[in-house]
Image (cartoon, rainbow, N blue to C red; front, top):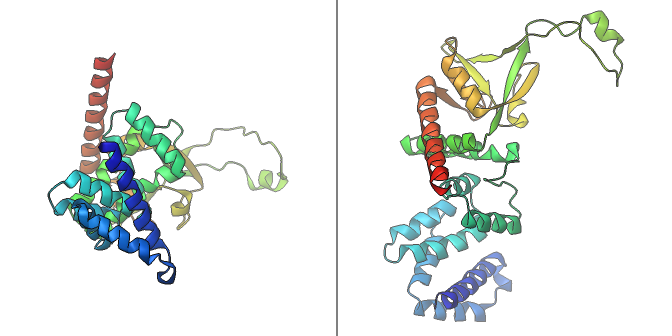
Length: 294
């Protein structure tokens, strides 16, 4: 019965998305009528389609389906399938859902599904594409700007914890406190030359100031974000965890600001402390589960 329902449900979703994708003059209206007649026999299907039709994005569609009540898991599954085919799923939601699933057979199935769909961000891979993975942070910041409330900030914090669990990195700009080379030495350098320095080069993290002249460590999710302004003469990738801990213990700064030249978000030391506590809690939980399984 389950397989039969799944088979029929798959065809309903495929047919409906196809109808939406083609232009009105090309739509197979005979198939539309047949689909409508079948849907009327299945109580959840028309409700799921309505939930999708009245939505503006993937999350809105699923929220509509759940708000209808009744058989919400079936409603959500059908609505979500249609919405994903039409809107796609935001990376931040994919990452959040995967972070709640224990690694094992189910995550292997999801990873294979992602591979078939051509999704390149693998939450459980040891070689996460940092640029694409950090798009989760950018998406969370975008969502916070939309919501402007506690829930938006909580979503951002959860995404940051997920990126810390992935050993995620951000770009940190530095400035040199002493020159690499003299002007005379620079004038003699040719393309392809190998250069050896006869002294150590001291680096200092470049900070940014807000309107009140308070200093923050500016970090960036991508080179594109960094190049929206002028940031240091040396850039390094550093783990999110290490730069958060550095900011927490550096008296000179108020905290961290992510993407200060674009759509930014400031993290005070209080926020950083809460974030690190949350990360350590999840890590301890994970280690406890690993110990139990072993």
